[in-house]
Image 1 (cartoon, one colour):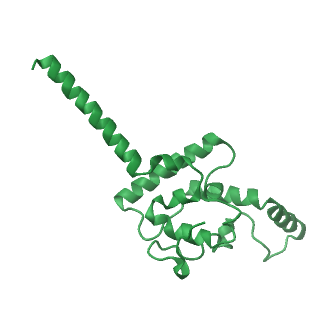
Image 2 (cartoon, rainbow, N blue to C red):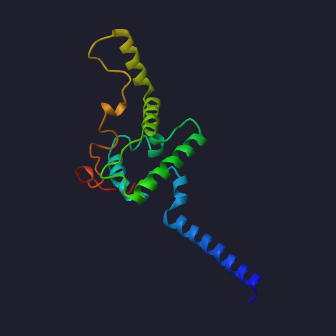
Image 3 (spheres, rainbow, N blue to C red):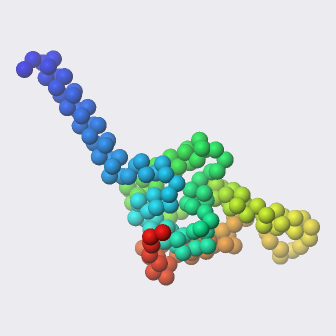
Amino acid sequence: METGKAMKYVATCCVVAVVGLFAFVVNESKMLSYLSSDPKVCINCHTMNTHYATWQHSSHRDRATCVECHLPQDSFINKMIAKTRDGYNHSLAMTLGAYGDNLRITDNAAKRIQNNCISCHQEIVSQMMANSELYHKEGGVPMGRNCWECHRSLPHGTTRSLLATQNNLGVKEL
């Protein structure tokens, strides 16, 4: 076989191998499902089972999905940027086993969740702000805190460990 033909053959085989490997990774990681807003996508990764199961048993199940709480709601572009950044960070942490027994929220994600809490509960928040300004009372509701500082068990319960599910709640079919 001539050197030129051999190089074309090797190059073609390399391209086919790369395309095949990419297709395998896309299929195995369920990559395309992450474009969805379905909460079941979050349990593609086993470390989210506890969070999904506790959300399923919470008051938020019928009112808010994972995407509605954890991603920006202001624009599609911001939502995709956050989803990409979070997905990269999650896959890196999961691959390297760097997350420990408990997942930790980033400052960026905490800000998004806080904004979404306020957006959904705007009536209550505006009343709290009005009361705070009206009464200037010591011991009232402190402003400037994250919602989950007081509402720690919503919507994921109090169990944060990846090793257990609160009250043995399992993932159920919806």
